[in-house]
Length: 402
Image 1 (spheres, rainbow, N blue to C red):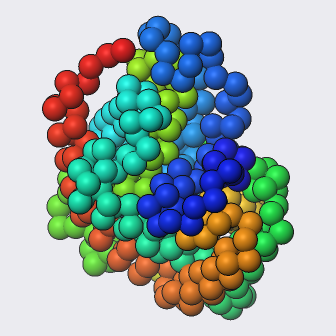
Image 2 (cartoon, rainbow, N blue to C red):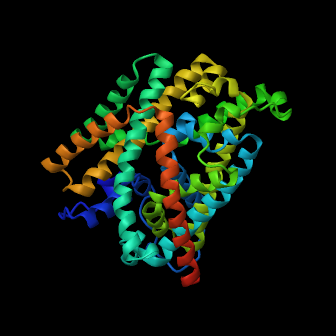
Image 3 (tube, rainbow, N blue to C red):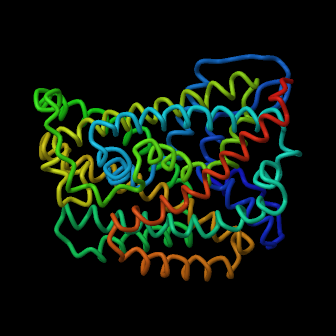
């Protein structure tokens, strides 16, 4: 977590420094789990590649990108399943871009080293546009927190039948309580839900696809009812938007992850592998949703419907894993926002945490699917510009090796 690896000695509450902490704070405990750095420093010169370390970096990348939208299946439904057969094309576009973005940013992070990448957005986009992204990320994280709270409300409402706001209030109080009482260890434990969500999602998807393989191969997929849920008119642009909005908040994290690698090849391999494996999971879930659109129709949490269809026990396990996964994402988001605006551990940060949690809870009362449909595509357009900045930086610097 951010509390373990962020600069605890910093006393500056300045916005610029805080925004840097905001970006770096999310899921930094993955770096902590990697252990001590190898001899030769973070940006070592030898082109070493360790399969184990590559998979650790890939796992951290995947876990970072997982949120309530992914866990519930709502993102997959809107960005891919809504396009029918061409949703697979959109997923392949996303796979290529995720692999490129992850591999490129981790490699850039390794090559530039920490001193040069203190302000990653400004380094990649220039001072003016980079400063804008630093401020925007702060507001975007608040929106993400609202989506997480809304996702918890939708999940518990659909599974347990409780009021929508009860589940949202439960998550908001849980996240604020973790911040107020400093429950870092608890968050570290539930942070393991990321890989579990991936594994369990693939298991549910395989069970669903196997049971409905005939209909899927026959092409009996009617997505007309999902037409209005599409984030873009074209399937290929939807695939681009999905990667673009995810990249906005992950730049600093991926560059920091790359600096932990022993070589630029290892850094790039971790990002590429993570991007590919993430989209493999999406493809499995997309096929599963496409094979049982009757379950997805009218459901805010379609992946939960798929799990319940496999077995009642699978539904119970999945909703528990999903809520823990949402919490493990929402808690560090709140930490990042608050530590970006006030001194960590101060009374001011506690007040800010309460106000942010309250406001996120209020915003989270909007329907979950509508929040996903508005916030993520809008951010995606800004993310496209950011991806172009990464490409420009690569071209101008020639991706030189150490």
